[in-house]
Length: 425
Image 1 (cartoon, rainbow, N blue to C red):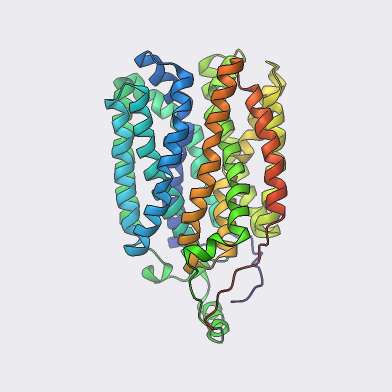
Image 2: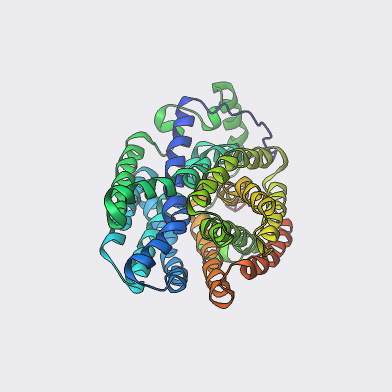
C-alpha cells in the first residue's frame, strides 16, 4: 500500500457513506450518554434516592470500568467470528437491557454490577463496532469520518442529561432507566437494519472513490506481498501499542474527568442546577465544532500532530478546573475549553490505531488498546472520588490530571506513526 497520506479534507463520503457515519454516531451517542455524560445525574440521583454515600457510588464505577473493559476483547473476537452488523445488534440490544437494570438495584454493590454490564456492552457497540465500521468504509479518510461520527458524543452531552431528566419527571428515576434503555434498543435495531460491514456490500467503494481511483489503487496493491495478520503476542511486543494505550488512555481519562463531573462541579461553584445542566448543552454545542475541527486537523496535519494540539488545549481546561474559584468568567472559559475537546478523543484514538495498523489488524489491535486505555481511563473516578472525599471538591483532582496530560503529550509525540508491515516471507 502506498505510504502517501491522504490530506483531502472534503467530506464527499457519498450517500451510503454518510449513512454509515450517522449510524456510528448513534452508538457514540449512547456510549457517551450511558457511560460518561449520564453519570452527571445518575450517580447523584441514585445515591440520593437510595440513601447512599455519593462518593462511594462514584468510587465503585472504577472497578466496574475495569471489569467491563473485558468486553473489548470479547466483542472483538465476536465480530471477527460473526460480523460487525451482527455485533451491532447484539451489543446494542444487550446494552439497552443492561441500562434498564439500574431500575432494579438499590445498593452500591448493585450499582457497581450494573455499571459493569453497561460498560461491557459499551466497549462492544462503540469502541469495537462503530470504530470498525468507520475503519472499513473510510481507510484513508478515517480521521475526517470520525470527526463527523463522534459528534454523537457531543449531542449526548447536549441532550442526554436533559432527556434523562425529562424521563425522570414523567416516570421517576427507575422509569427513566426503562425508557432510555428501550430507546437504545429501538435505535440499535435501526442500526442493524441499515449498516453493512463493507462498502462493497452496498455496491459502493472505500472512501467513495471513483471507479478509476479504485482501479488504480487495486493495480498499485497487486504488486505488493499479501499482509500476514499480527498475532496478539506480536502486537504486545510493539512499543507503539503501549504508547497508544497509555498516551491516549490518559486523554480519555481527561475527557471523562471533565465531562462526568461538570454539572456537580458547577453546582458546587454556586450555579443553580438548571443553569449547570443548561451549561452542559452549551458545552456540547461548542463541541460539535470541536469534533469537526479535530477531524480536519487529523486529516490535514496527521493524527499525531492533531493529538498533541488536542492535549495542549485540554491542558488549559484542566488548569482552569484546578483553580478554586466561583468566578463566572473562569467557569465560562472552562465550559468553552472543555466543549471543544469533547468529541476529539473518540476520533483521534481509533484514527491513530487505523493509521499504524492495516484494516486486517484493526479490530484485534483495538481490542488490546481498548483494554489498555480503559485501565488508564478508570483512574479518573479514583482521582475524582479521592479529591471529593479529602477536600469536598474536585480542584485537587484536576491538578493531578493536568500533570498526567503533560505526560500524555510527551508519549504521543514519541509515537512512530508509520504503518506497520508484516509481510509473508
